[in-house]
Figure 1 (cartoon, rainbow, N blue to C red):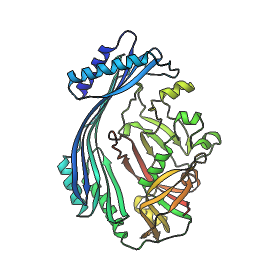
Figure 2 (cartoon, rainbow, N blue to C red):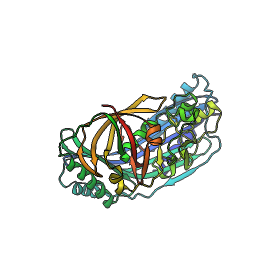
Figure 3 (tube, rainbow, N blue to C red):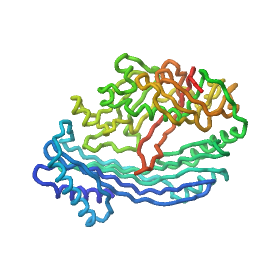
Length: 440
């Protein structure tokens, strides 16, 4: 695949004229997808995908477009030529872009990871064995992902990795289910079994009558999947330079009023440990790490080249959306095995949904508990809870009301596959929080 990418880059370079510059991003994947229901395979397939996005630049005028590739160079040569000609016509009539910024000093790189995935049949056999005949519903996606960047200046960047993602639920009846996720680069049977055993233990508890509690403030534990969802919402503008300068960030009070989170909170964009490539579409390399929050205080923004040009600051290689791609939350000191004892009496929240801001400026979020949410007493799960709505600020959750974060963390891969397999990851602990507000 890498040699094919270099051949495509050579074709592009041969097509540009005079002072034209091309910035070209290649994406490819070879993926297996298996959908399961009642613990059985219902649909299996494989996808081989190749695509190319080109930004053709003439001075400060530019136009971009994409084309699907076949893998046959002769056929692809014609497709690429048609795309370049179309972009040439468009770039001649568009206005100049005052915030155009791209890498002008070539920095080539290559990052390749060994494929340590099991065969598709082996993985499915272990999944079905672990399910023990339960009603397992989910999707298994695995395979190779390739990304490349090339420009007229001779820069070539390549990234190849292999990963898997099992996103599943154990369904008991109607709306009672336990959802779980197992993702990574190397398949480990014992880790899958640990997650399955934990999910099955929660599933058994769902047979008990649901408990209803009144609205109020409760001590809660947010499992890693639930905390990851809160951080995913926070990523929509929370860390981007453009959102900060336009004052639309939900973390505005941290910037303008010096508000802080708990001193133990540390958030890092950790490119080196994630699945996303370490370069972006304008040719800038992404640093191994960008500290976002340190010691509870805001540190750095994610600055895309376009925002950097607009606001006159250096770029740190963020993608255009300026959202974290490989977010890592520092571990705490609460052992996972001790969570329920330290929770004592309160609520175990496994998942949340319908998250949104009820007051963006105050970073106040609202949403619903979902699946595997339990009432806890005397350090033990007692009964499932009926679905409830919450309304709480990140400043309280991860600030003054944070009791502690777990020492163990979960690596969670976004299961989205709408147009391609997502490479967005979080590495996140669970969180013990007191005085968490449930509204209905």
